[in-house]
Length: 229
Image 1 (tube, rainbow, N blue to C red):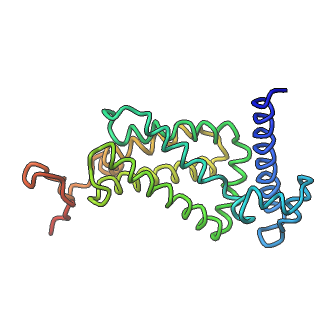
Image 2 (tube, rainbow, N blue to C red):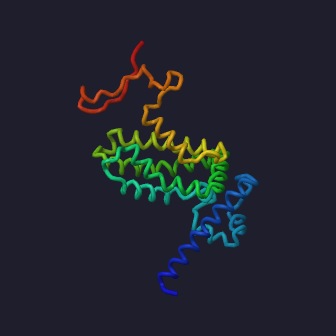
Image 3 (cartoon, rainbow, N blue to C red):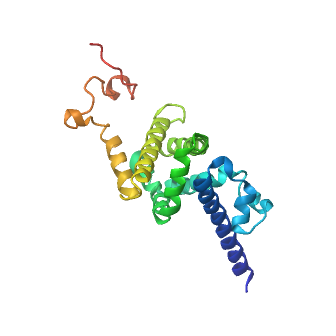
């Protein structure tokens, strides 16, 4: 066996152990409850020591919410590969494609993860915290590709809205038991955002009480202002 083959085997083994620990944590917490499961029990279910567990996860909660840091780096790399000429919304949707495909490819585990996370607010808060770090990195990346300053509002708004679209699609997907493809639900959410979130009660029209941004009058976009009655 060459050194490269040995390194590849070790990497696969580590990936398998990490996945097994996360799966055991999700299964045990779903069965017993969050406070009724210890790191030692999770480790024993995979036949490793608690010390080995902490080589992969800082805490039990981290094992439950998934690898937010790894997903962040993957999305940022994918975003960097999208041509700069592609509009911001489309670029972010393209950057999410790989992660979405992985979620659907491991649907059983992700449906269980979403079930557990939605049951325990502390886990939801941790998941949102991890996503906050991802969103900040996305803001900086989007600012660089669009020529905006990170603090001028536009990059942060786009990332916040698309992040909400992703979370909404994930919750709809999990609530429906994965009966509809996550990719389709995410496309629907992005399409609604791109259309200006039209109100279905108004036949698909956007809210007429809100002024559209007027870029020509001010030399740039400004915050929409609600008209007075």
